[in-house]
Length: 227
Image (cartoon, rainbow, N blue to C red; front, top):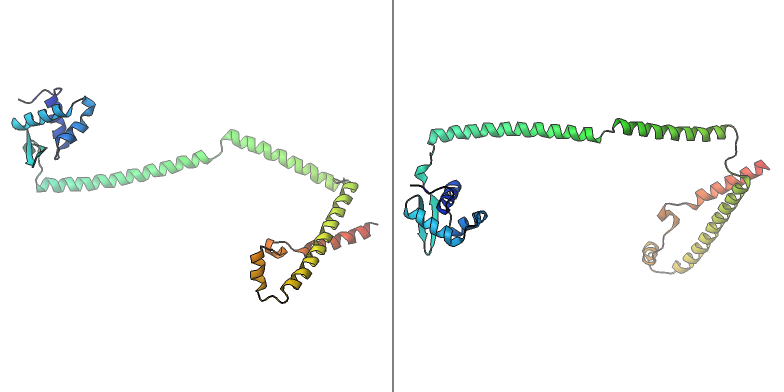
């Protein structure tokens, strides 16, 4: 007579049949910890089930391996296995189609989530309209001849610019004269020597003194014209 399902033997028998694979007592005890079963109780139940013929077992040295009785299972024949394989292939194809459909829906959802809401669109529109209005006001001031920079501020800026460019030109000339004296009789390659010292020319950092000198010349011409 099979044991009650809620007894120790019933729980162990149900687990062994459910797993339907070789198990030792430790495997079973670890898996059934949720039932608060001790290993000794599990071992006793396995042995009782084996002795009564409800499960099979084999001994390997001192260890016993337990297995569900295979005669209780409906094992399919070759024709049934082939039908099962075909059904499995069909299910796999259907699963792939479903996964593709889910992926497309998820992609569409992400696209919708990335779009602005109506409230966000209105807020952005208001901000852009405000920016356009501010730019139009500035443009109208320029068109009407309103001076946005005070003459005295403009003069200070131009004088500072002139001084900085002149200082740049002077210091560059001093450096080049000194550099030529140092490297004139040096056996080292100038480029390698410059890199060794950590020096950088204007061109190395993307600036050009001549372009600023041209701006200075243009500025001087405008001053003469305005006088």
